Length: 505
Ligand code: TYD
Ligand code: MG
Image (tube, rainbow, N blue to C red):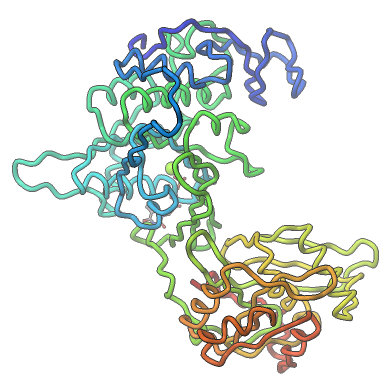
């Protein structure tokens, strides 16, 4: 294992295997989480900052002969050059990365077990390998045969013309030392680690984290995770191999090893979705090479993950207008998506009514309920209120306010917007409507997907009229918007209005 060891001087710190906190001195009990006998010695390159800090990386680069000029330069004399990119041809994936893989980047992909991480990885591997790039898929969870079977099923094995060589390699191995050895031998463009929780660094060698070690640190322990991630990150920086690491997420939604890995990598992606529904959303959580606003939409099918095309569902295919379901054109990075906000109210107990938001900010919901009471004349104090965004989308922009308010008001009163209505606008505390950013994009997208009527902030209506196709209605205040809700036959009310349709994209 010594071959990839860091030559620089190392500093020993002590890492708690339970909470991941780092201490300068050993103690019998972790000062952070109070667990007993969990501190393990951990050698990291002496870099002042955390592991894989800039100095340790450049030490490695220097060792690899990639020494950079360490003379300070006036900023305008520094050459920029475009960041080279390696696109996978899976558009939904490339967009989230900011245009494809950056050589030498370490990427962490987090997600619940079963969400489809291995499937995504194999499809990415197949696509890159098919494009003539070498890929090494290191699986520590499945046997090589299992990986091959999955690849067969996904049609991810590149077909090889005569005299060409296969670019997709599989290694079923949990020992990181072996994985690194194979990576150095094969020099792939992309190394996939599935998953870091099942990978371990042997205690014998002197890798970046080698040396003194407690007996507790099996694969998945915090010290192991950190060691593996440090080694992989160094490998990426040193060799220019892009490393994509899978990490499982714990029950409370944290990447296992509390935030432990995030600062060791350049990009953190989250793969989200409900195992019981088909839609999956890929999000950038951190990206040193691009924005984190973009999302990738997929659906899980019998043949793997398929990109969700924006126009696959439109208004006219939707269900009948139902109270509590309101459609909002929402901005997700450079795209506009139609999302459905669903609300349900039920009589609860005065003073302890429940309010739950999923896909929306809870405190924003509380504010909207107060605005509905004060300026919409609704009595909601004893109502349990549940609001969610269908299909696992998240709406964190205030332009979703009006839709949320109308969903709550509608389901409470058994009233609905006319079929084919879309709504956007921010609500102020005084019940007025504020203009929304990207209004043109929202209007064109809603119209493109068949909206019959769009409620927009009155202050923006005139500007939008030219693209509005005569279907815009300006709304000055919340009460004006409530006028658009009309009673629906009671049959539709019975189900509470929540339609079973998922993301309307
Ligand atoms: P998987 O990629 O193994 O999830 P993870 O690596 O995140 O734990 O796949 C999860 C689920 O996806 C699995 O229960 C079966 C399902 N699946 C499909 O529906 N279609 C497919 O083509 C594949 C490969 C998996
Ligand atoms: Mg898996």
